[in-house]
Length: 314
Image (cartoon, rainbow, N blue to C red; front, side, top):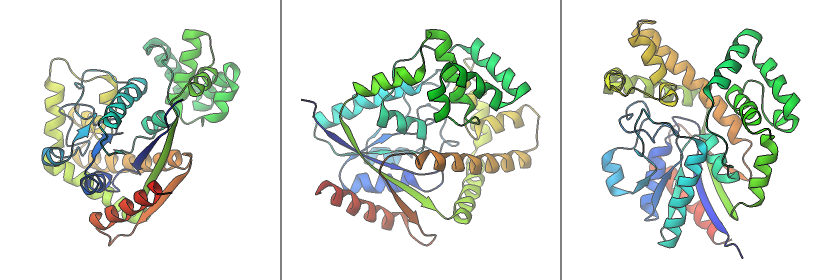
């Protein structure tokens, strides 16, 4: 008989103060943090990712942070396997923990599991990207509809990265990703979930995003990116596409001014927050918690602890 495990997840769009609130919750319950943020894996990428401070990580143990170098690649499948190993070890030690982060694809990987797909084939990906640039995302989505209509129905044409990945898997394996994923779900461990999603009013969120971007530059984001680029091993494709880093790279290459770079990061972060919310709305049984502008992180943390305790006793 498979043991039922309830996983508690704190998520929300960028700049909703998840890091501070998650830290407060973990400290209150005397637990640990399991990160579900796709950019916290990289060592040396600290400012642009708003990584938890070393002092916070000394007080509360954080897992899956600083686990790879910026020139290394890291996939959702690898993350899910690593996260399950961490979760299993924490349960064996009878340690409380909270999964915290805003990367929807990684959280979905924990919820649904992910099959062990083929390695990336960049020749296929680049070819499909060129087609998308020339004929549009809908045309590439149409290619997926022909080979895997079930997966195509699940994915929006603008979700080009995942559309391309589904086509890539079909080309590499000859099998539909929708079928492979369903087979995996049937053998998945019996997890249950308590998902709390933080939200803020749009004006408040955008104000916080703008302030966060300005703070990153004040802390030395440009110097951090330059230092990463100066390393002979460079940056992986994934790391180069990190929000904030890709725009600064363009600045360092002379493609835009510093002022334009800041505004582009603010704009792209707002767009990213919208995409995050679209993902979160698809999660099963999610509990929404809107933060008012005047509320402090400690006050929010106390609310969530009460929510988690109420769930544990039902």
